[in-house]
Length: 154
Image (cartoon, rainbow, N blue to C red):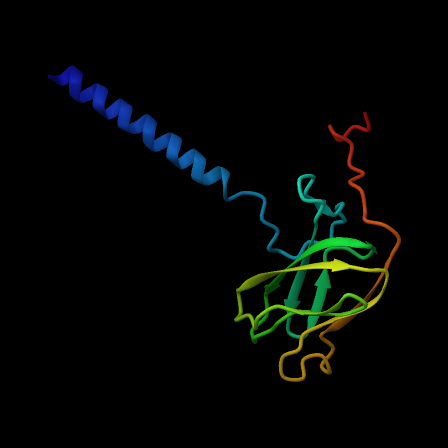
């Protein structure tokens, strides 16, 4: 009887450990601190879409990359400010806008950028006039992932 009880406890402990390990693995790698390190654009090989993080604060927009080539992009806008914000991209590919985001909320804006100049700004309550805007130039063809497979240049 004691042996069966001990075995059940061990099995339950192993199951709980495996579950906790899976949950913790899904939580790592966030960059909520606004780091200024330069990393190559995240591009999904399966979809060919480049991810750009847009950090919205009171009253500034910071993009995770500075150079853009024509192609498909996924702008992930996160409101890290104290006021409602949104992200709008206006240029040769038309106008694209997220919904208004409460503080702490985020949204993804998928857009195919063509060559030309784009204005990126917050369209909420005059925030653009308060400096919540930036401009990007898009040229050439879509970026390619230049990160070597193992990170050592081989």
